[in-house]
Image (cartoon, helix red, strand yellow):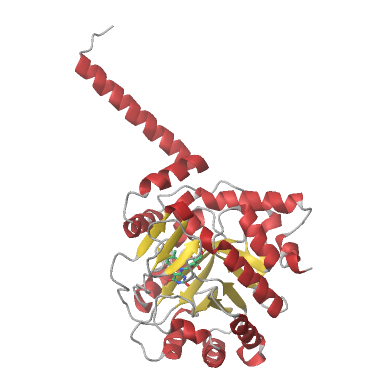
Length: 387
Ligand SMILES: Cc1cc2nc3c(=O)[nH]c(=O)nc-3n(C[C@H](O)[C@H](O)[C@H](O)COP(=O)(O)O)c2cc1C
C-alpha cells in the first residue's frame, strides 16, 4: 500500500468529492430530478435575475439542457386553432424574446414555444435593474419594456430554424410595438408581414404593462380597428396563420365584455385569446421587492388569471380557444385553468423557481388528474367548470 502525506489525502478527498458531486449533478440533470433542480434554482438565485435568465437562454440555445424523458401520451394531445399539439404545456412569451432557445425549450418538453415579444426595430428596453424575484411569494416582477433584437435579427434566426428538420414543436411569434412608435397598428402589421410565413400562430400583445399606452389598445374601438387592420394583412400574406390576442388580467367586467364582443364580431374575429399577461396588482405580497414597478407574474397571479379565463370563456361562449397563463406550476394548476376554459396552458415564472423538470412534472401530473377523473382526452375537460 503506498503511503500518502496528509496534504495528498486532503487533495484526494477533495478530488473524489468533486467528481462525486459532478457525477451526481450529471445524473440528476440527465434524469431531470425535481428536488435537485429546485435546490439548484434556489442556489442560482444569488445571481442577478437578468444574468441568470441570460445564462439559461444561452445554455438552452446550445442545447446544454436536460431532455424530457416522458413519452407523449394520447390523453394530452389536441388540435387547437387548426394546429396539432403533442402536449398542452407551452413556454410563455418573454422567456425567449429573440428566438434563440427554441430547440432547447423543445428538448425540455414544451409542447409549444412562443417567441417574443418582438418589436419592428431593435430597442434596449428599460434601464436595469428591471426584473426581480419575489422568492417568498414565488413570483416575479419585470419591467423589461420590450428589449428586442428587432424583426430582422429574429427573422433571420427563425428562418434558419425553419430550414432545419429539428423543429418539431409548434412555434408562436408574439408581436410588440416600439416604444417611440406613433403608429401602433403599423408596427403590428409589419410583424404580420415579416413573420407570417414562419409562425404557426401569431400573437398581438396589447397587454404588457411596461410600454406606455399599450394596454389602452384593449379598449373597444382601438382593439376593433387594430384587429381589423391586422386581419386584412394576415389574410393577404398568410391566410392560414391563426391570429391570437393577449390580454391583461386587470380588466373591468365592461372591458371583458367589450373584448368578447370584438373578438366574436365577424369583422374582427380572432382565432384565440391568451389570458393573461402580468398584473399591476400587488395584493398579498410578502417579498422585499413587492413595491417595484412592473408586471407581476407567478403564484400571486394564478387565481386572478384563472378567473379571467373563466370570464372570457363564458363571455365568448367557448367559441374562441384560450391559452391560459399565469402562475401555472403544477398539474393541478393547469387542470384548473383547463376546467375554467383554457385549451392550452403556458408558464414562465415556474421555470425560475423549479427549473426545466417543471415541464415534465406538469405533464405527468396533468395526465394523472385527467385519468383519475375518467377523462379520455384533454379536450373533453376544456370549460368543464361551466357545465
Ligand atoms: C421576465 C418576464 C418577461 C416577460 N415578457 C413578456 C413579453 O415580452 N411579452 C408578453 O406577451 N409577455 C411577457 N411576459 C408575460 C408572460 O408571457 C406571462 O404572461 C406571465 O408571466 C404569466 O405567466 P407566469 O405566471 O407563468 O410567469 C413576461 C413575463 C416575465 C416574467
